[in-house]
Image 1 (spheres, helix red, strand yellow):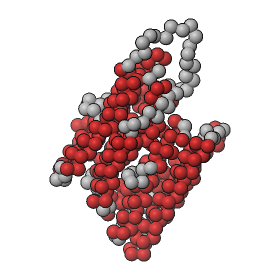
Image 2 (tube, rainbow, N blue to C red):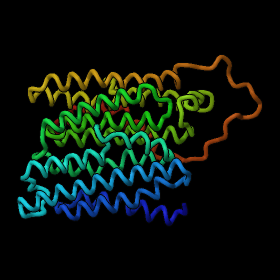
Image 3 (cartoon, one colour):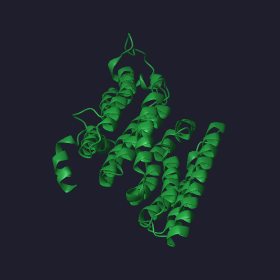
Image 4 (cartoon, rainbow, N blue to C red):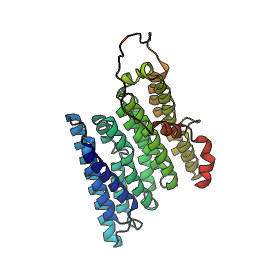
Length: 347
């Protein structure tokens, strides 16, 4: 794709998301979603092959269905309340329909089936955009309608997403599918807290986006799409192997790293709201995620082939991709825990 065209398409994607985030009128929000969806499809089909075409079609059909459901919910709400304002969601049926439409857009369970398939069919850079930027718009709408969301429905969706996000990734060797299931699980954590503390959901979303960006950039730098190709990185760029180890543990939510912050705060907030069973189940199912992150860590940084590379010729090409933002992203994705008390004061 030629740079001017790519810039124009990316600008449309960003504009669509911005319109959704800044609007308080349902029609403008819907238009923003449509702009975003239609502009992202050429990005998904950047490497034009049957797999990418199939993935783009699946994405389009799912998102179009979700948009239709959202518009139906908005129309029902309009009939009952007589206004287009996002803050006035008074009808329970309309609220439920909007919630279902937005969970479908995010890829939360039980509407998660498209996420691994679409992510696997597209390139790493397109997958990075799909699993980071594309989550912002639906989450901002959920944030705005959070007072009217059905608590039981959202808790059920959150629990199912965390469970499926952990379970689905267990048997995977493809890195893009692993990241897709990781995304489903993280979205589940955000869905669990959105009713009780929407601001905390945005903290979780920000950290998730930073960690996912860093992980995808490392995969792109080493040109790895499977666990096997990732396990060769120690021979070429040893530093990447140790960085992936740290990032995976952060994604799993282990204490000294940034990924621990959202899990800790969400469990704390849920227990404050007299919920004991839900955070306990979520913490247990998060171990499934930790298991497949540990598998990646093990194959990348903790195992080595019997002999070093003694060949005169280089058996891997030099990487030409410049990942300028990678060092600051890695630092933020792993070392934010010490400033957590200050962040909690601001909250």
